[in-house]
Image (cartoon, rainbow, N blue to C red; front, side, top):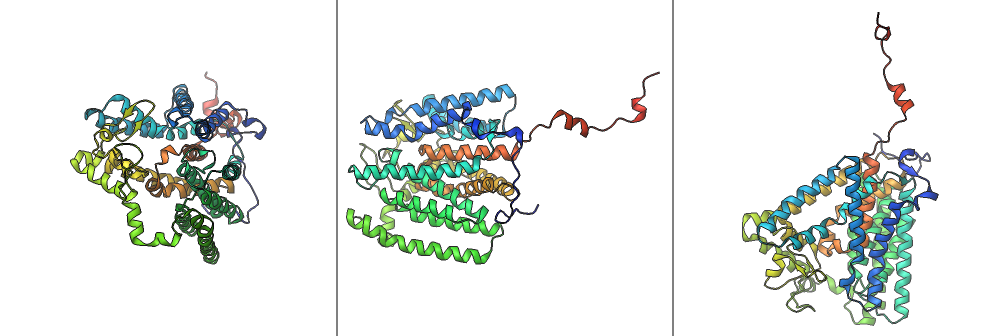
Length: 473
């Protein structure tokens, strides 16, 4: 089917009436209120605990709300007597990677906690997929919400700065104490949606606004990785633009604009951030020795007995650990083996037996040890399938806002290896809620087929033959 051109096409096909709800009523829907409570718990509660001087281990409210949503999801499935394929996939992964640590002597509590930490947010996809009525303009509302939330977070950051909080890891808006990584993951998700909007519509002002907002917030919390992440997202967006059939002349103009933007950012960062805080200028991070020292740092952390490995060393160390035997190489140490909970007093078996008690900001090293090579490859194949389904649907859908959301999700899904290398994404709750809910909504639009009215079905039924219509003698 021919690809839709959203720049010049003015007709808009509304979603099926059976699958939408009026704008004035959807905010009163119970499912929307449940998601609002969960999102509030992820966004505001860490900040309130920090300002109140309470430990982060008390942040259990979000677990309760997420647990209620998961129970409702399973209730929907039982009532409708229809199991989504995504749930069957989750059950299969749960069975295989839970047996491995249990047979190795790990406690059931650690395994269950590891399962919950891993599947809590992906189960939101099924919840969103089962919602029967979504607002018809949800994709457009979603993009505006991201922009408003970025403005709000920058406002909170400026208030923090005025009250004496220095630029750094804790100048992260409502993401709380040392919430810079979670804040950055939310910004990267918004940037992907912004680039997706540009790919779908060719309109660059919205994308530029999101990039500027992300730049301001990242400068306040000193996120040097923002430059690298935006460069990678931009390159992926340009490739997606060409796959979609974009013009080379348009591509050349945007490359020049991106290059000038990055060239302007370096002196601004060095003048207002690096020089005032005694940090290294950005150009020094291009030195191979500095990069190697950063990636392979093995310095001891704040917690006794633990070492905060650099991202490169953590992945190398994880690869060495799973070389114990072929089973561990393929399946890892199992679900929950590298997770812990201070509030519950739970520690995974592999983490408890670790000589260094090592931790790292990178999630890829933890995934290698928990799921092995087979688990990482399976996750990669799942992402390829997701991107393929989104790309096929985005090329044929008539709603440009929906296509923009799908292209943005393609970009973010494609870069999961980068996000896993940079951070542990499953603790970035705001980003995870937004990603999995939007993904569930899109798959609802892809696979849901509205029921036809009875009159329409009657018209489609074949007319009986005259011989069949005769009354019996």
